[in-house]
Length: 199
Image 1: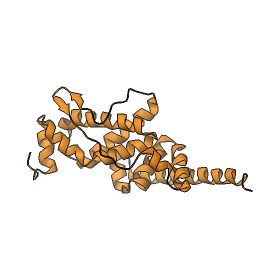
Image 2: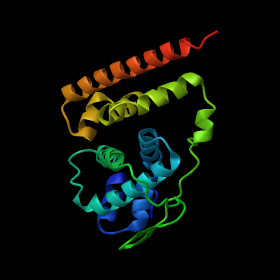
Image 3: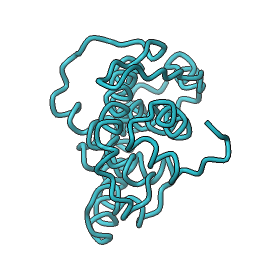
Image 4: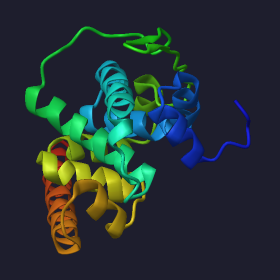
């Protein structure tokens, strides 16, 4: 595999069943996919399971990718949909190690998840405000939660979110506005609750 292969070339090779090309293609996306899953689901085990599922869905669907939208938009749409499906089901599945190969009809895919500093223990040690914001985000409706994560945590533009979520720009802006208002309301209630215990 030549280092000079462009993303488009890798996509074409993936469509022809080249597993090594798929591994190279997914490398640049795995951190963000895991980050979205971790933020949406709130724990590392479920995020790892969902990340595996996203990789499998991408591999199985790559042949139908028509390249009308950017690859990143298409990949993050799959990731957000899998996360939303998992939130709807919310039942535990058997945990699969990210260091073990994914079994597919065409062979095995070896995906090594690098330590991205996203371990829950490290997050817990961060500032109290971050912890409270995370808890508040988890209280939001799923449709509000995902837009806050995409916009305010991962920094996607309104246009990118519109493409990922497959909804209008107006809907995206409206959801983000409602999500931020809900988040503000939750945080204010928590602040009031804690103030009752102040000495």
